[in-house]
Length: 269
Figure 1 (cartoon, rainbow, N blue to C red):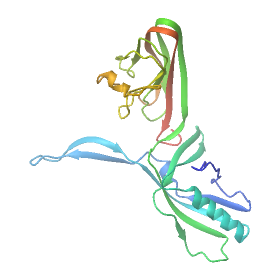
Figure 2 (figure 1 turned 30 degrees about the vertical axis):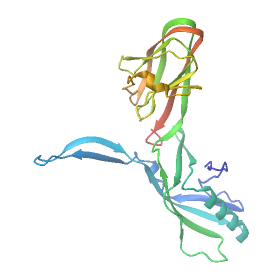
Figure 3 (figure 1 turned 90 degrees about the horizontal axis):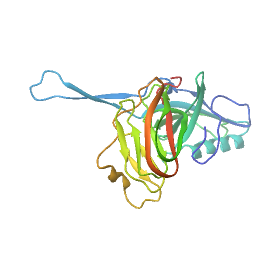
Figure 4 (figure 1 turned 90 degrees about the vertical axis):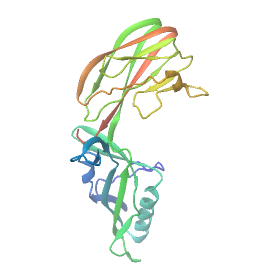
């Protein structure tokens, strides 16, 4: 674990050191899909209900943390370190290794830690009940970034994408100034034009973000999209696929960077 304060902690099991802390168990919430809440509506005289969207909720982890020290002083320092690193206001990064590679999730406290049993002035080992929340419920294995570099002027081409995970992928784009960029909307075949940009720019295709941002812009440049937005994601388990792209009127060597964040519901998905 990498704490919000930059400290590092090994919580996978006892290390045999003078100060030690590890998770005893209770990480079941990591090994199953993120919790969901189905929503439905019902009119006054309707038989039954009408299903609507299913909301993906935050992920709660309820686990026990064992803290121990070789001496009372070692125990006190180990206990203080753990109480310092777990916060209600900042996230810790927890990384686990599976047969499919490393997976990371960000956790913060959801409830106040509770000591199991009683602690005396002679205690050198104690269990603490912890309840942590992942506000973003997905694990991540990093972000794959590729480049399309056609050069100066106007060009049409393609770039490869894939989504080997079990979570839909919303692409992110970054590019250089040009009269116009035309970007793909997922696998739909629809193309979305980006208005003229005089500086580096960034596009988020996910709909709950501002679509367009420009470097150094003192105003909300996303309004220049005039309501045009991206509508389609890259579905889970999508094999390598070529998507079209076009740039027009680039006075500098054009460069498009495509970001593909790898999110996972299942730790080994």
